Length: 111
Image 1 (cartoon, rainbow, N blue to C red):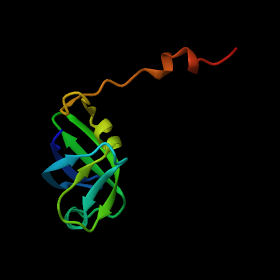
Image 2: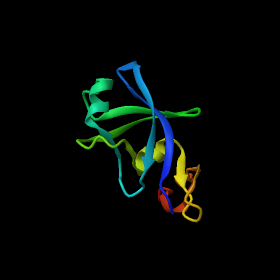
Image 3: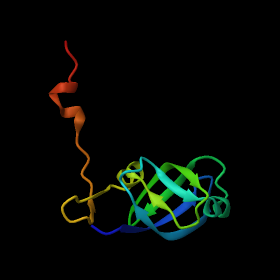
Image 4: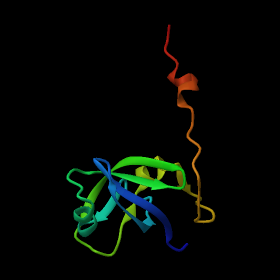
């Protein structure tokens, strides 16, 4: 299976005009996104949250900073916030269908 990339727009939630569109590598083994320090400084991100957008979906998600300038990595929680998942059979991205856990009998309060 090769690398999966996704074109996303990353912006500063406090200053949405500060944004850039990049091709980020998807790695579901990382829990959160990893952004290069240069990108964090370019966008003026002062805390560990950024807005990630793709075709009609957006999510404010946490990230960690990397000194490596090789590019951004989207982790599992960021990908799920954008309503995407990796199909383990094909290695391609597909829409993520969140489960309605509240309808589960396991979560129904005992009366």
